Image (cartoon, rainbow, N blue to C red; front, side, top):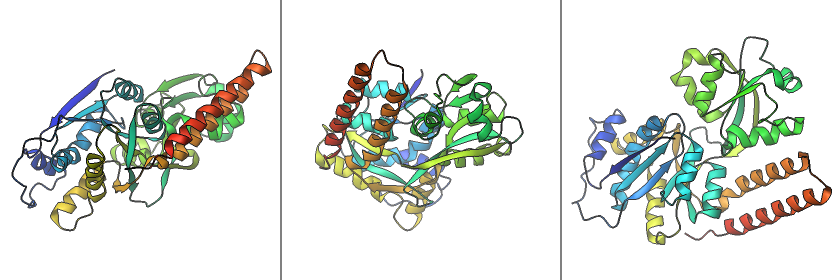
Length: 346
């Protein structure tokens, strides 16, 4: 799996390139301070793949260039093509800070010594987004009833198993309650990003795709012709928005500086604030960030716990004792996660 790296140096020309990307390069910028020696080694920022690796990286470039100036540290960007590639990079301690959705953020905090510092906010003001199932408008594969009655006739395009809206929530809230395991019951499957799964259905390479409201809104603006072929046949309950996590070994002072930068980004009045809001708009139509801590991951922990429990209850076991042992391990793991998430220190 491919990954790409890009580094920003503090007090460079990065902001001016960022403003150009935001289509606001002509606006005046506040004078920057005199350049100082960096306060430490580069901060390695991992980006959750939304479209392609290059697309995701380019969308984040302007904000990360300003973050570099704000904390007086270079920022190296790791942009990957899959959730699994980013998870492996985090496991290898190649990431210091990251933009992650629920399950990946949960694993980073409970297993990889990271802390939540901020959570994204979208323009719609809702505290989360919804998982979706997309199908083509034309029959015969355009009805949720038909899908649930004959899943083996349908070709599925889904997200990776670490994707909350691409796998976890549809499996938990729709398929398992209807005695359908996504991995085994469909005629075939394609695994990819939300953009890739929507395109697969639009181009008749699949019959149904998992997606979410945020990504589908973005898809509509980029692929209007393909969107006309699609319809939503199911949507989930609200899923909490993604988080920004930072390595726990960083000092509380540095984590607070990161948090202050993020929560202030796009809030100012005038040309600079306007330019930042354009950058946020390109980042999944974000309105900005709010301060958050580990407790914001409690809904994600609950979802993972419920899915694990449902899988255990519906699986085939050699005997009741084996199933009970698995359920006890699930309960113990969930209790440990809840304990870690009670740490809300800065």
